[in-house]
Amino acid sequence: MADEQQFIQDGLQRSQIDEFFAEELGRAGYGGMEVAKTPMGTQIVLKAEKPGMVIGKGGKNIRKVTRELEERFDLDDPQIDVQEVDEPDLNARIVADRLANALERGWYFRKAGHTTIDRIMEAGALGAEIVLSGKVTGARSRVEKFNRGYIKHNGEPAQSIVDEGQGVAVMKLGTIGVTVKIIPPGAQLPDDFEVEEDADVEAVEQVAETEGVEELLEGEPDEVPDVEDDDVEVPSGSPDEVLDEEVVEEVVEEEIDEAPAGEELEAPDVVEEDVDVDAEGDEEAAEEADAEDDDEEDLDEEVAAEAEDLVAEMEDEEEGED
Image 1 (cartoon, rainbow, N blue to C red):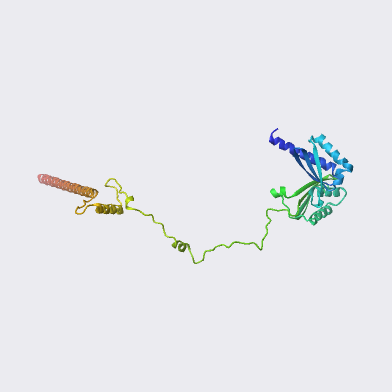
Image 2: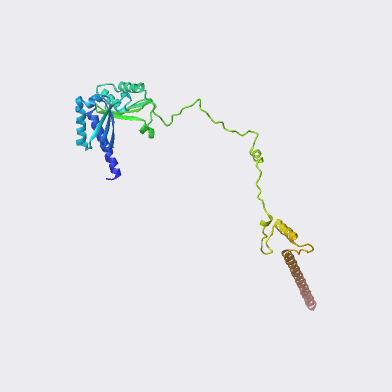
């Protein structure tokens, strides 16, 4: 059997056993059960308001219940432990059964609800809620609620802290469902907090108002990396590349220091090449500009000569006509 099916089967079996105990032990004040499987068998812990009625005279009733569990639910060696409920007014299952019995005996629902919830709060509960749903007073069904104190309706605390119980009252007009929710005294709710007056709190260092960030950084010297002369390398490349002035000065100084006395250092070839290239470029540009000027002067002279020839021809034609 798969794990999911096993969980469903165990939950169904637990609910059926709970219904069986509610029918058999209703008069004894059945207050719930806990089922645990052990290597020795199945251990069941019963909570009842009157443990004597559950056990019966000479243990007759408890043996009957054990035999029914083995036959109806196929439990292996069930071991039943009966425990008495310390405060029945704080057990939601017992309170719901009491309220249902009171309604069946003819109590008015408002009186029964207020009386029951007052007894719960007097027992020390932090909060309680009673919900009656069904044909409470007439042919139309409705819902009546009675609230006291603080109650949780959803979330993890509603499942782990709140004690919930249901009961059914069979009336002439129909059944009435009874739901009781109780928060027991001493429950630790997630929104609870305590204020400790004598707590030791460590002192917190605070920066003076006049002291700023810049003043704090003044005492810390800036770290400047040490650069040695040997670590400097002269970049190699074409003359068109731009050289760093500081690097060139350092290289020249090193050559001066290393050169023997009496010898003169030649200027770097890179500088000469740069100068020669620039000079040659300037000369070529000047020659091109002069050639262009000469061409323009020749064109102007040719145009002027042609214009003079045309004017002379026009004058000759006019004289011939005359």
